[in-house]
Length: 106
Image (tube, rainbow, N blue to C red):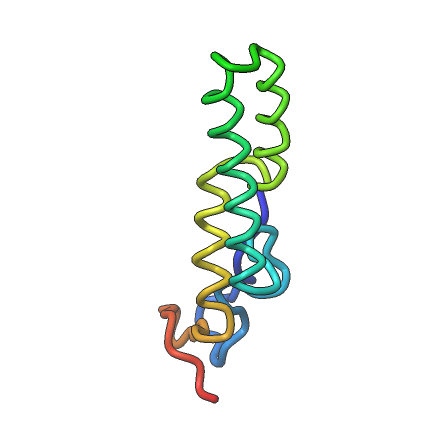
């Protein structure tokens, strides 16, 4: 499973990792691209089952297309959406062994 931030030892200061950093396997390059992937993924999954009465079980071949577009599961897509939206807006700060997510200063 991909990680969303880097490990920081207790007592270290500064912002070492960021939520939704470029090392994440869930986030996309942009929100519109992520939403397009979701539309294709959810559309293919819905069509795979909704079209069975019309075209038969052959429509189930759309299910793998949907899962590939969603990168494995709908929950992974939802996590990626949150990471994509928050990319660059949050930063992780650790002080005295306590870490917090704070707004990034621009």
